[in-house]
Each structure stands twice: as structure tokens, then as C-alpha cells.
Image (cartoon, rainbow, N blue to C red; front, side):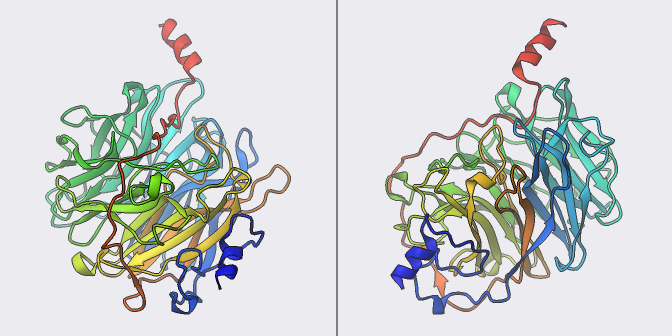
Length: 503
């Protein structure tokens, strides 16, 4: 069996697998693995564009959100190497992910026709229950002029038709890593408020927040944290009592809050330092947080981290929790495999069933991985994995492999490396987890073959073998240098200088 595992999981295997086995994660007897015979992959969108300068056919960086049985996903379509994409795509399901409709946001990009911008990036989805509006926030990109910081596209018919985008924030040279959330708890004092977060690279990634109380039609003036802090990759969440908690990467992993409906924002509190292994092969990745909240308002933040691995040789996924955004639990390892394994785990997307909480919270995480951490651009093989917990993270079910053996040459380039995205996501409908993620296959000539997919048939088992990291302890304070990411968008520096000198 060990010889079989080596052939299946090794970096030089030529076996192209889009499978549901978990042998690469757990070297236990596969007879004890979670039964995943019902799991299958469904493509929910693909890139139809051919217009330059996009790298077609590619789709990257998906996000998904659920409300009832409706799922709405958004993603970059036609990745442009210097930044952004030809269009922002959407896909909507009203039957819990069984069937999907898809299209592209209007009035946004020139590549999709009818839009003013050269590209767009960083899509994130929100739902405003008070006003019955789905929203997709994204970053507009212009090659020649300034733009508004963020735009929001709205749908009032359940996510099937979308209005031209609404402006959020001031006109700027550059902005990055936006996210959006709405307060949809009817008993909250700020029910119907929606919040957009982003950062300004021109001020050293200064954190900015804007609030809407009319279904995303208008947005308030951008506000900073109490200390005008800098950070990137914030993912705001709203507790049932209306408190907004924003986990974010700063000099470490931090979080700041608002208890007055976005009227003001606190000083960021420390969640953890960052100890991260640089993922091999030139892939675009890093310790950006992924955040989700259980039904009672407990927040979980997940990121890639090497503190449990000898010499920071590879990344686990780790998490910390908080009930108020200010005090956070110790960092805990998610036991996808043993700390002696060669696997590298990165780009997690966490979701929690909102009908569950506390010690019975159902957690699901999709993530990318390499079977061998030590690999090169030509030998690395990229996969997509899934793991779940039925008891709030006390123990974890056997992980599931959803895809594997993707070659890095099949991925489009970006200003920060080969790309599947800075984030992916997981959402629950009626207790069933759904992830969205990019899967690539071999190119046809110079044309890529990377599309947005989801997995059907995943569950959060409450019985069966359980994995625990209860005895694991950090081994060191080592970290590779954290990537100084170039922002997705903005006027090139030479054009900025020329523009400023002409003023």
C-alpha cells in the first residue's frame, strides 16, 4: 500500500485525477476513509472572451455566498497579467447548487462591452435581506486615469440580472483587496447596513471602510480605523447583535470592529503573528485570512502557517476564534495530515453552516495543496482539497481530494505569480457545503483551459474516523519573508508621475 500511495501522490506521477479519494492526505487504511462516492465536480462557468489582452480561457479568484437555497458566485474571467480581468463573471443557483445560470456583470469593463474600465478584479458577494438585494463588489481598473476605489453591482431579481455598478469610495490612483458584507439579522439595530472594506496602496495599504443603508444605492464617506492602520485582505462579518468584525492581514493577523453601524472603527487587535512558508513554483499565494461566522456569532479565521512544521518546511492550515473580535484563541492546526507529511496547504476558503453554532458548529474548508512542498514550476502538482468538522473544530473528518495533478504551466500569470486566486470560498445551503474554486487542464496551443467549478455531494459527517491536533505544539518562530504583493490595479508608476507633474 505504501508503494501505491507513493505512485499516486508523488510529484512525478502522470496520472490525471479529478477524484474523490483522500489517500494523499491520510496515509491510513483507505477503507477507513470518508465515503465520497457521491461527490462529483460541476463546472459553473467558463471564459468565452477572446479580446486582448486577456489570457483566455481563464477564470480565477471565486467567491460564493448563500441565502436559503440560493447560491451566488462571482469570479474574474479572462485574467490580464498586469492586473484584473476582462470581465467579472457571476453564477447563480436557486436549487442548492444542482443547476446554475451564469453571465457577466454589465456596465463594468470594455472587454465585456458597455463599461468604462479596462479591467476589474477582486469580486466578492453579499446579500442584503432587508432590501432583497444581491451585491457583487469589485475593483475597477483603468490603464490611463484614476477611478473610484470600489464599485458595487446590484441584483434585485435573485442574482439573475445585474445593474450597472454603483461607485464606492473616493477617486484614487490605486486600491486593493475589497470585500463586502451586509447585516441581515432582523433583530440587529443596524439591520440592512452593508459594509465594504478595501485598502489604499498609495498610503501603505491604509484600511478603509464605507457603509450603505439603502441596499447599496449610495455609500458613505470612507473611514479609517482608530489608528489609521494599514492592512490587506480584510473579510468583514456581522454578528447577530450588529457588531462588525473585520479579520485582516496587517503585520500579523489582526481584527478590528465597529459596534455603532460603521460610525467608527476600532484599533486592530492582534489575532496572531504570521509564520508562513513560501509556496513553491511561483504560484500566487500567501497568508491572507479567510473568515466565517457560526450561527451564534463566533468568528473563525483560517490562514496558511508553518509553525507546526520542522524548519518552516511547509504550510498547514491553522485557525483562531473569537466571540467579540478583540480576544482571540490560541492558534490551532487543522489536522489534514500528519506534521511529518510533505504536503503544502494554502489558499483556504472557510464556511460555517449558519444553522449550527458552538460545540456543534458544522465547518467546511476548501483549499489548494501540493503533494510535495519541495517542487519547481515544472514539477509542482496542484490539487484542491476539502475537510470538515461537525463539532466546532474539536475534531475533523477525513479530508477529501477534489482535484489533483494540475500543472502550473496551465495557470495564467499575474503581477504576483501564477494564479488560481488570492481566495476561494465555501457556503452552506440547507446544511450542505458548497465551494467554488478554479480548476485548470492542459492548454490547447496558447489557449488556457481554466474554469470555475463546484463539488456536488459533499457533507459534514457526524460519524466515522476523526482527526485531532490536540497534542500539536508550535515548534519555532521561523517564517519565510511575507510577499510584498503588488496591488491589483492602478495607473502604472510612470503614468502616475506624468499625470502628477502636469497638474
